Image (tube, rainbow, N blue to C red; front, top):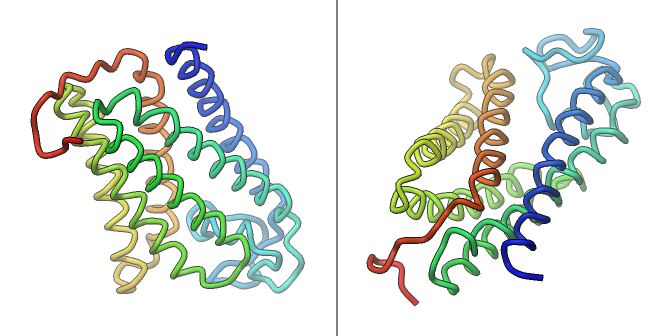
Length: 217
């Protein structure tokens, strides 16, 4: 198969995976028994007070077995697998330098490996930090090439993704405005998934024009 055909297949798998993840995530919220950091006895999932990672915890904040856990774990696996496919498909279509494209693919894939390791329930903060570092590095390099190929809309949305990532970490680690973090987290997820989907959609149109610059073989 030619490279454009392979890209079309991978991009469609990724786009389907994004929509499947969203559907499974929403479905999982209906099965969450209840409890959040503010009210352990609260019933059901609160979009304003519960975190995404609470859906993938075997035990809910109310101390009961989390009925949403199996669905949420499948959703997480779908998401991380989808993003691995994204990082395999997109860099070669956008980046002219093979070594740089491979480096971005490796960074994105390593990011997802650390992210999916979070399902073990161990070292949550450490795994998220390492995953985020590799992910931001991969995105930053993509942004350079998006800017150079005049894909300014994708470039600015990508910048917003990085800003939101930094803001989430700032709120989480400092505790400032922590009550807004669950909402901020969901907004960030929506922006990130929109950006990933848009990059995939535009991928076939991307033609690398970079001949010079600091990223060379």
